[in-house]
Length: 317
Image (cartoon, rainbow, N blue to C red; front, side, top):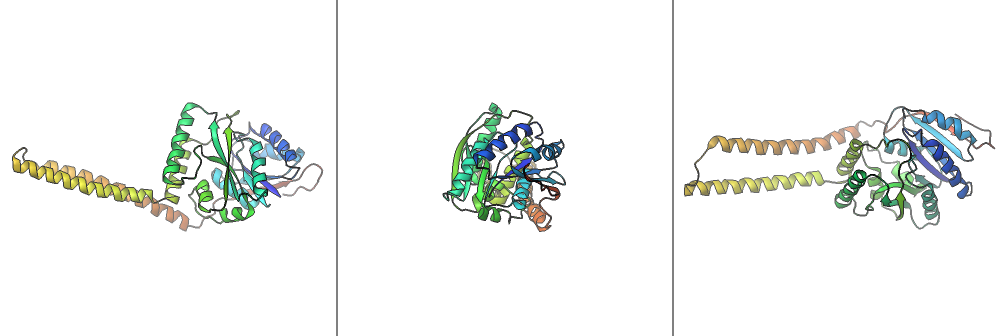
């Protein structure tokens, strides 16, 4: 059984095209596909639209609603947890990733050539600023976190049931789904595609969310901040020693006169700011450890509706 998970948030304008595309995808997969929609407490009418129109579609579906907005990655996790099957794929609801790519992902998984298949963006039809930010973002990601990440990044992926079982075992409140896919290992395959331009609406994936996600990736899968702090402290000590040596030499040569107030001010500013930087970085790790120690659920399902194709009358709630 194949299962496709789609997180839904502020996508009401895209849903008609999405359901039409999924109907074609269902036919191309020999009518063997179940689709799980996770409505992440979307403020528009996404849930009601799905519940109204899905009963007329040829595929079986599952509609899940979160009690509040937990984020797209929590929605993906919920979809994976609540779904059954042998092979799983995840795509967004805005159709910027071609549904045909889902078919290729399932074919690669079913052939046994890979346990994880990721869509690699070879190009993207986005505004220049978005392209520039994305290129920089993923370049840093590749440099400091996972060198095997494609240059264009990853927004769509698929995996086997075994990999899915490992992914849902992660209980970190702040982490990176892509980082987890890289961390678990297994055999990976990348399939290139061109990311399409968004036809309707505005993406809810804002700059702040992207920055938060990047920081989550850094702190969850790298000790880079701590290594940066150690390097900064080491360079600070060398710089302080060098300035002290130069000052002593200048005093001995009579080039300058001793000014105790300026020396004290520079020392306080330098070491005070260094301490604040260090406390901020260490505090970030402590805060994340504290969040994970609470043991709170990563999401809460408020409603779950199974929808069968028109030829099967069993609809359960």
